[in-house]
Image (cartoon, rainbow, N blue to C red; front, side, top):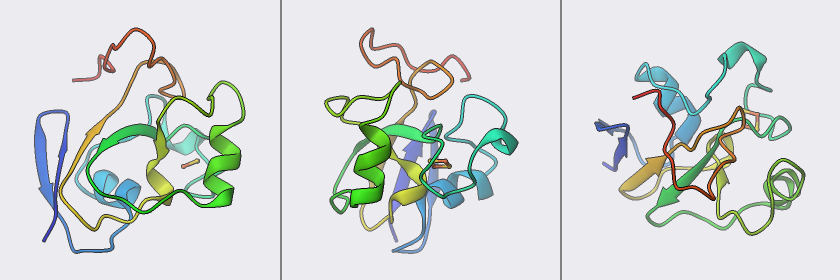
Length: 112
Ligand code: FES
């Protein structure tokens, strides 16, 4: 059973579960703004972007397309939580900005 570390919390989940769903079910969020403003997992809004340490599958074309569209950039290294299946222990980090796009200064979101 994989363990996700996010904002100093540890959450166990079944293998294959969607990362965004696991976080939301645990009362956490990969969104810096209201979840209601998101696309709810369609890979179109980009607001669930997070940095992930750990083994995950390569991004789909749909995910890559969104992450290549501003304010994201192809070299950010971010992933869309709504497009990631959890298959291994992961450490997940949310950066500042509405989309969590401010990776350049290394600042983690101030929500925690
Ligand atoms: S919830 Fe919109 S891209 Fe993930």
